[in-house]
Length: 106
Length: 120
Image 1 (tube, rainbow over the protein chains, first blue to last red):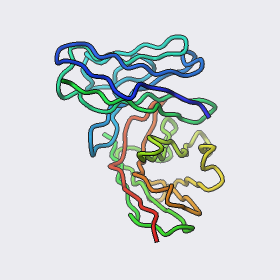
Image 2: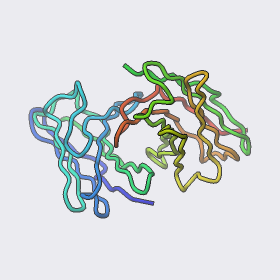
Image 3: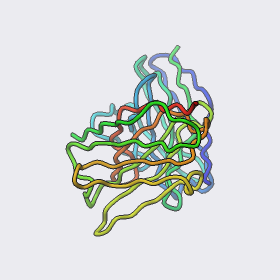
Image 4: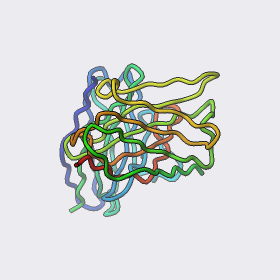
């Protein structure tokens, strides 16, 4: 089993930058995806292959991955970005999700 | 645009088999570039990937170690859908179950999710 650890919560003021980390053994050797999930909804990918954005995802979402840590950055955070965020990576043909981070926009 | 429509019972008795189906529109279950996944979510376990099926000149399956002895994911090419079967369920299998299409390393499209409760 491959473990991915995230902080339980992150708080950010509107317009500021939120950073969410995801830690795993040699995570930098794998591709990381990030998913946004709002209450009662299915997850939506906001970053794939560490730093690429799917069509329709705003430019304020960016990602990086190196060493044992991947980071999702939300620049100019808006109220609509308040949600749970999960990282995900593949290991030995199995997908693993992070523990999840609740982003609160205060 | 791919759409995934899930169906199946919302209540299953302990020790019985949980069965769900995911109907695909906008793509083919036999696509050589897509993979068809099942994921579940519960407060205690978070998001948990259960397995996938995909076609690359022949059919392949991968399953999570945690459920490998109990899970089967099958394609149905005649109906362009895929299914999940989880045997010998317990209350710990209570969760929202999602189907999802993956291309490359991420999960592009998700079904609407179905809450399955295991209870007598």
